[in-house]
Image (cartoon, rainbow over all chains, first blue to last red; front, side, top):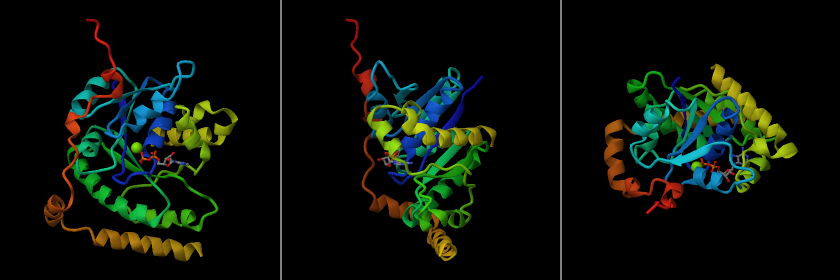
Length: 212
Length: 56
Ligand SMILES: Nc1ncnc2c1ncn2[C@@H]1O[C@H](COP(=O)(O)OP(=O)(O)O)[C@@H](O)[C@H]1O
Ligand SMILES: [Mg+2]
């Protein structure tokens, strides 16, 4: 069976692409053979996994692909069940577009802030362009770093309704464990009690992804 | 109030959409305004393979 290919993209930096890619992949790896493709020249995903120890390795391999993304991915689709592509924070190099052009789904993490919302408008245009040649692509917005007590966070749904792509029901809350796990080269799944709530939301997200 | 904030946010998104430049002018503007992209194709494939030690 060919792998399902998921891209995580947003041309804005710091929206949580790498954090989402790593934790999604860790969750997918409990369901089937998974690979992370680091398409960002900054190499954060590779660095993250590189911090893990031999005793507690990151459960998913990370390979960095700098060019010929489409060719590499179609080759790897035969050996895995899930491929997760962590995209660079730009649309200028065409790498994010290549990733989306070979993906089944693209997830766009957006922070609950006006500037992040505005910046994502351009991405929806790029996604519409790609859908012309890749008609199977489904795009979803995911709210990251949600803060339940913040009015801005609670107002997001009204603003996101203005976008032409749907927002996932699941969202990721702002939690220290997402940062701490990176420092240890782990996913939230390996953080014990500290990671429990985060694991729960990542699991909800994965179930929603796999059934939508 | 959350509702007010919500419509303000929604409004700002509509404005951002309306301000999207036409595709053609957008392209020409970007050529002059953005610095040349990094030479991505020349980056090493990954820190891991780069450290590989060949048998010979
Ligand atoms: N849900 C979250 N809760 C807390 N911190 C987060 C969360 N998601 C991301 N972060 C932090 O926000 C910063 C940017 O995230 P990152 O995944 O590197 O974004 P990107 O890959 O889009 O640049 C990092 O410091 C990361 O640890
Ligand atoms: Mg990143």
